Length: 136
Image 1 (cartoon, rainbow, N blue to C red):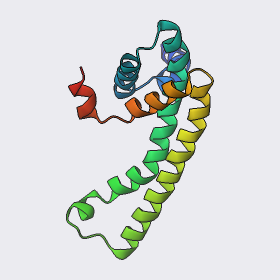
Image 2: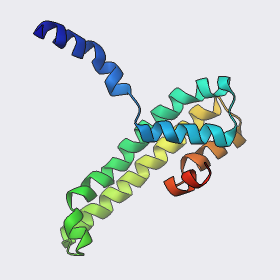
Image 3: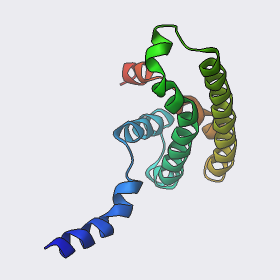
Image 4: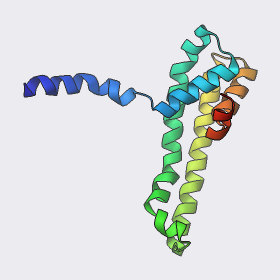
């Protein structure tokens, strides 16, 4: 029984690791609806979009992980000079990585979509949650 469960866990691991978050699924649905993508376009764009979102999250986590570590002193406005320097450096590094990801994926999306569609894809993908919910 233990061996069967272990084999099942190993077999399902890649699928679980590659699964998209509900937020990314909702974001793709919003983007594809706003853009009016055809089924064929959706099929081509979807895997690229999810890879983009995964890399974007990693880039943003450079800053977010450090910020989360020091949330209490940040909210109390009691961070030290060293923490402030580290937070600024992490924010700048994160911004640089986000820009690299966006540039790289603009090329990947351009292989599938027109330049105008790429522009709108990034525009809609960056819409805030409140803006996305107001357009439902």
